[in-house]
Amino acid sequence: MSVLDQFRLDGKVALLNGAGRGIGAASALALADAGADVVVLARSQDQIDNVAEQIRARGCRALAIQCDAMDTGAVTAAVNQAATEMGRLDIVVNVVGGAMPGQFLRATDAILSDAWERNVTTGLRLARVAVPHMLTNDGGSIILISSAVGHVVGRGYAVYGSVKAAVDHSVRLLAAELNPRIRVNAVAPGAILTDALAVVMTNDDIRNALERGTPMRRIGQPNDIAAAVLYLASPASSYVTGQILAVDGGLQVPNLDMPFADL
Image (tube, rainbow, N blue to C red; front, side):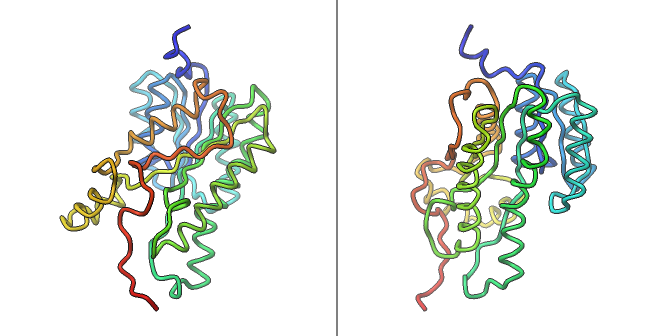
């Protein structure tokens, strides 16, 4: 067998939460390119319908389910529907997350709670609901999307970096508890050119600063992350679990530190 064959996902079913655009959509299409049937979840029905059509154009089955990742009932219903309609569940990817940088002393309790819920709880909730379905077959692979700020240090990232560091450790803890039938890993992106980043990339000063601050001297693309997701989803990574795969252009510090003065 060629090593390239180990990246194939024929006969497998993948579910991605937060797959309407950006990293989630690119990852869904990458898994379909490898032969997986794919379930895409997001709040925007139009977005996931579009992704589902692109999956079907690749010759794979697709199911688009509108779902709010912050709603436990909606997530439970969506995963159950996916497993029932697709017949199995092998790969689960949580892309939901995000938080704005800012000065720590201005982080209200609401900001702290929302960051935790959006970045940590969504992944744990999805895994909790999906694992029983995965165990009815051969087990599988769970992949969480973390961030470089979970392990690099800079001003302005106390909230976001803290919750992403929690995501990283949840990966290690889940891997220990779900071994050997289910592997759990994460991808930790750096600056990736998604719609969220595109808003500020129109500013040449910000773009230049991000590129200069990245050892690879470029901004990442969604497919950079999708390729890592495919690796962690596939048999090519069958001996990998509990790991955080950094796909960040070589960052050791944030490539855009916040210019906050000393207190």
